[in-house]
Image (cartoon, rainbow, N blue to C red; front, side):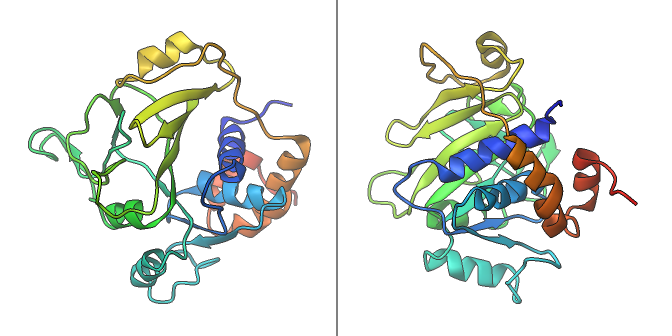
Length: 248
């Protein structure tokens, strides 16, 4: 049976959550419009990883009765281990831009803005960058505006840094000490050449690049069954599109 691209991305992020890291993921927070990261956290839990999921600004699974203020309090206290960030632009140093494009920033295209991205980038130990579109328009040499920096100068407090960047074409891991991405895996059907051509920043590339590991049959059954049941109220259109209509 054909694996949907969304299922592949969910499985790839679940693998990153369980990957060895100095900061274990016990509590992950996911934004209001992030169905793929939310399903990935739930899949990691299905696989046996002891992780709590908080869905922000949603009716189901949202423990934050005071909204973002409570989220930021928990992050500042070190009680959120993983957050997901994206951007209209992402560059090779893992800087993200949520303001807009052009000079000055936002003159060509304007976005809603930073909200708490910079705060979360500094206070949460693990950040996974996620953007399905993989093109030179998104993955740029230098962002037009830094909404949240990938790395900071010595002496600047931050608990961690981006762990990886997951796109619709591949997975990059990020080395904060070198402020540089490395190609970790290629999604099925992608090639080194196509990824290189579609990426505006330079990155490291090992001699052998594996294919991104897809979901197992157990993973897919969980995604279409109990995980869908847990998240369908929050992401009804996503669940219907990826997993099909519910049986009558």
